[in-house]
Image (cartoon, rainbow, N blue to C red; front, side):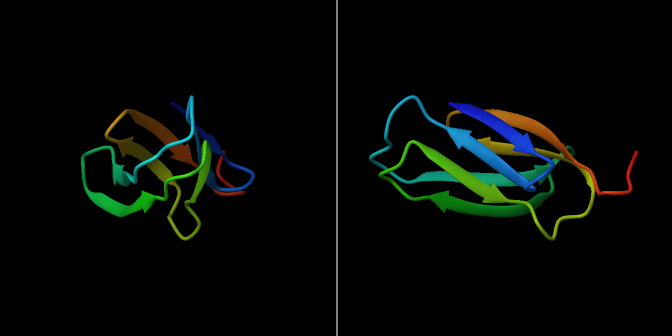
Length: 79
């Protein structure tokens, strides 16, 4: 599983090595563990996009049963 964050689309992109046959649960937390958002990725695909629109700029962690990946969301005017 590869997890990447795109500042342009404001999405976390998840790419699996094969098509999943089961739901994958995920959560987005702050770096200190505060839950921000959670959900499930539906089976039957090899790649997914999870939107982070509406979240303020900051550092977050995207976590599934398989991996955990930190990312930073920056606004247009953040340096």
